[in-house]
Image 1: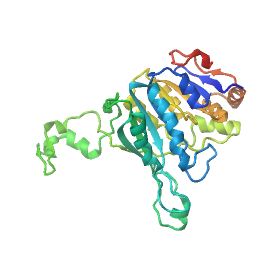
Image 2: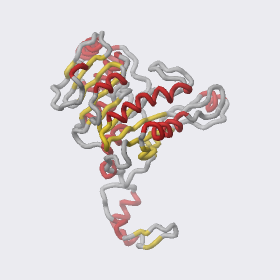
Image 3: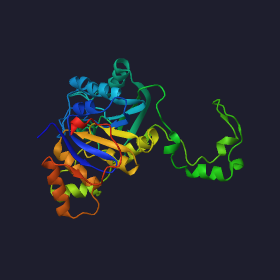
Image 4: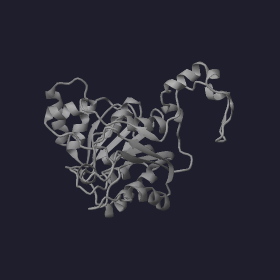
Length: 330
């Protein structure tokens, strides 16, 4: 078996199994519009998908980030979902996730375009020792989502990800004169008549409230059909969807370097973006193909899974876009 396997392809993208550093190296410089990923976190408890110790984590993830910087287009972005952690044996927080953006910006030349926070209201209480047993800490339910850019002016359009108006705002739009008078507020904000204009939605905040509760989608059903465990650390589709809509346009290239169950690829496909996903675990890559199988019976699912596990390539649809991968990678 080679160290790089072209596992499956769709109309817009490709899934590869292999070392992401080697796979990234094969991509053309200045070719990627967005890298969005959720790497294994530097947790104290070892996970089955693999995670580094806190003392070595920063060096490890910085190697990937340096290569991402080279491969991004000048107006491209690097979005990193990263969870916090506690120090070993004590109810005090590690600072590794805060040292990460400082290092990326100081040493690699990234800019921190904005810091986002993903609040998962459905997250179970953790860590058990400090929250459930001793009851001395609150539930850890927020991840940092760092948005890095190669320049101070990355491509972005917030109008593509507007939030629904609140009921109160809808009433205001129906009859602005009944709700407010244009004037300068005590805070210094000048609220003019344009405040009552319907812009199609509200500007979202950098706190993204997205529950992670998928339990019956095609991916989970496929895993059950072939008797394998679903990836234990999947992020919800609305997280990559927000950033893909916000930071890219149709036919732009989106890459996930720690793809896991390939939520990113599925969302990019739906939104008409070219995509590439990389993961080191062949079983995870094979199972992620279930996201692209429509209404097939269990025999078809099993045969697709077995074929990818054997090292063969599966084409779900004829690819109709070009991807910047060197031919030698095949």
